[in-house]
Amino acid sequence: MAENANFDFIYNPIKAKFKDEISPISYATYIEKLIPVDIDGRFIVLETPTESFAKYITGTLADKMRVAILKADVGISDFRLKVAGTDGYAYNAPNEERAEPPANIDKKFTFERFVVGKNNEFVYEAALAVANDPAGTYNPLFIYGGTGLGKTHLIQAIANKIVSEKPQLKVIYVTCEQFVNEIIDTMFTSRGPDARDRSNKLRQYYRTADVLIVDDIQFIENKKAVQEEFFHTFNELVSKGKQIVISSDHPPKELTALEERLRTRFSGGLLFDILPPNFETKIAILKRKAFEKKCVVPEDVLTFLAQDSGDDVRTLEGRLTKVIFASKLHEEPISINLARSALNEAVSESGREEINSASVISAVTSYFHISKADITGKSKKKELVIPRQICCYLMCELLSLPLISIGKELGGRDHTTILYSRDKVDEMCRVNDKIAKDVDDIKNIILKK
Image 1: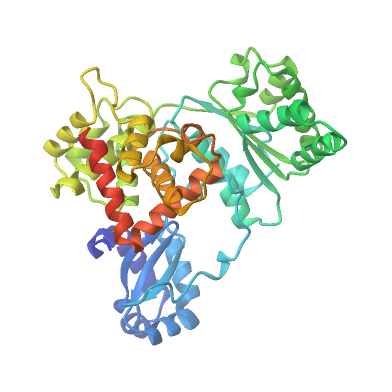
Image 2: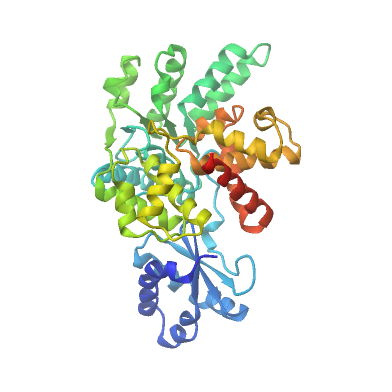
């Protein structure tokens, strides 16, 4: 469990608002006894000394506490309670029982976790406006920019917010690659009497969406049959007043292998580009990521990591991850010397990362005495499933790769499987000392290679 002091900078403003909203007697009796022990997504976890405290707070103070938390405006929107010495929560927010987002959406991609700077403030506001009012002002919303700048985070944040606050709406998030594969599969691999039925079901699935979000639309270029299908889907949804959100690595006018009629429709909505972050935004991103990892990083180390880090936010986060891991591995406080050493260990003479998908797979297979075919295969045996999930987790933690690429490296697995495996291992590491040790040992092997 993290040190309580780590949460003071976020809990103190909340506590000050509690004082404004709650009577002095209740504040002194109950609020003063609460201890912040964790951050769980948009929730701050508060520990109570007894179960009776938790029951009173739940029944009497909860609504006022939620109001105070929102007024504090620190990126937290609710709270959970746990009783000291127990597992699980004694109180969960009442509005948590909502529709689940699409399985291929990362729940961690929220607006609260998106770091806003001068490079992305306008696109952030546009995305938030779409999430608050789907099919309102900005339809379609077309977001473009280079790799690793936050496009996927923003469009998935739209999905997460809509599902959370408007669960009656049907939200579909799909990568363009997935869309292309589904269309091609129904067109060319379906045979027999059910072929037309499969095609119609797929078409109906997409054309009944209230919100359709397509990531990396550039992959539709040079695929005329798929473009034809998407054109009609696009038209039908817009004519029905449904929201469409699209991301791309280039603006529509530069997608020259795309049919003119599609480029025209994409340009007919609102276009926003995400620019590379400036130095101040990089520092803010590093602070946010360090906070999410429950780690305090000195200012001079943040400055060092932000320098010469390139424009890719994933690379920036990867540098931070290596330094935090090195601190835990060597049991040393984070410093400039440790950061320089950690990054030098992870970089070859040519300046390219030695840690890649092959080195992670090799470390996992060697550790568990299994083969690469076992990792990439389909076997459901427990002795293979856990190493495979650990491999997913480590690739997500140590590599700056999109989930699609990780899935390809691990036998063509989809977003859902990669996300599930990552979260499963993260959970197991908290409750299973052996799994936690295995993961740390494999990380050590990877770093030392």
